[in-house]
Image (cartoon, rainbow, N blue to C red; front, top):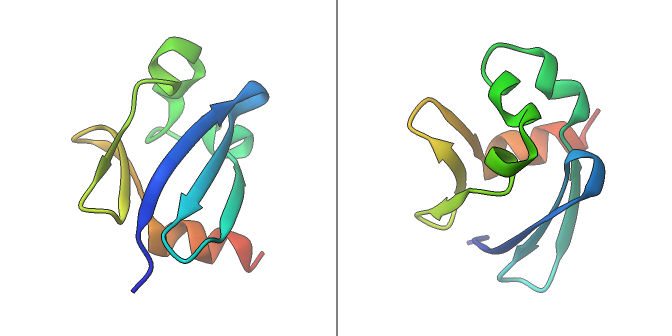
Length: 77
């Protein structure tokens, strides 16, 4: 089962997500920052203050999180 083991926030709201199966995902969050859910992450200090929750969720707060399933769906588009 895939698990998130590390996340590195990069410039321009890019997340470099490392998984336990030696894969890495580059996730561009810029377009998501316009929505209500992720709007607060425009503050770069907040964007960089995340936690990995249960190995399958990147969480900035209880109301602002991104699951591994959502990340995988983003890759399909």
